Amino acid sequence: MIVDANEEEITRAAEAIRAGELVAFPTETVYGLGADATNGVAVARIFEAKGRPRFNPLIAHVLDIEAAADLAQMPEPALRIAHAFWPGPLTLVLPLRGANARLSPPVTAGLDTVAIRIPSHPVARRLLAEAAVPIAAPSANPSGRVSPTLAAHVAEDLAPHIAVILDGGPAMAGLESTIVDMTGEAVLLRAGAITRAEIEATLGARLGHSVAQGIKAPGQLESHYAPRAQLRMNIQTAQPGEALLGFGPDPGAVLNLSPAGDLREAAANLFAMLRALDAVGYARIAVMPIPEIGLGEAINDRLRRASAPR
Ligand code: TXA
Ligand code: MG
Figure (cartoon, rainbow, N blue to C red):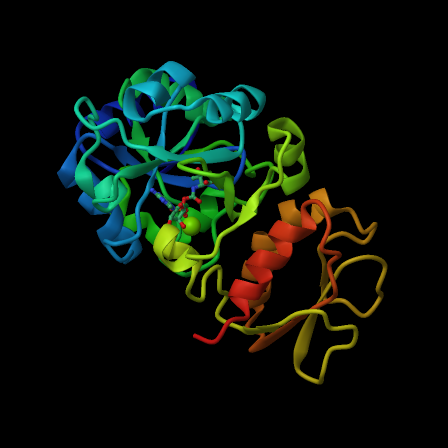
């Protein structure tokens, strides 16, 4: 089920994609649950496996900007940030190119926009090249739960649904891609592995805040990224029975996202440590304060959703 992501196994996985089956694969952000985005039956399997509401659209992964432009209109500012950050952990929401869009409608949940990402991870790229179709891929976790950063996480959660799980080691960033809506004024829909400041510097403009979040990115609203344990954030001292998840030097922490207080390290550790505390069986997790700067915006976003009422 879990196989080493070598050339032969990637070839076999690409064949599985073309046959309409599900393949889990590593990306530079988190592991994805992939299917042929042009095959409605294959795409339906994603929603079924994740228990994902059909109104929540998927990201179409492609190999290059040409392939992106086949699916979507790419106005000038979109091209500028595409060239700056692709391949990489950026997703752009763009107007669907009507007539020749090859995407199966459930990928976009019937919207007239499409979320597109060009991943940089070599395994993801080879899979895309060999499958030679756009690959629809959400994070490979049951809907609402913590995203996977290891092949083993995917197997724990979703093994019975998946033809091949390609093991490419730990996902590097540990946080999902940054999503920017480029259908009008540029709006940050989901903080992620590329910081707001990096994108604003390239755009030469501030990113707008998503006002109609619930409509624009349905998956962004409800409780999400949730471990089984209840979670509280911005806590210095845990209560009895509560596991303290540290940031910065703290001898009292059960696990520490980054003893050195490094946000990149904390991002890479976040999901795996939430899973590890769940596995120990803690009913409650208290997370120390994470500064709301750089990657801290995305880390705190995930923690806020994980601590939202369920
Ligand atoms: O890093 C990532 O982006 C990972 C890897 C596997 O690429 N994928 C990922 O997919 O995080 P997912 O499905 O877990 O999150 C995609 C988000 C969802 O919140 C969805 O609502 C939003 O993208 N989305 C997709 N299409 C959209 C659209 N047309 N308009 C607005 N939001 C959209
Ligand atoms: Mg997800």
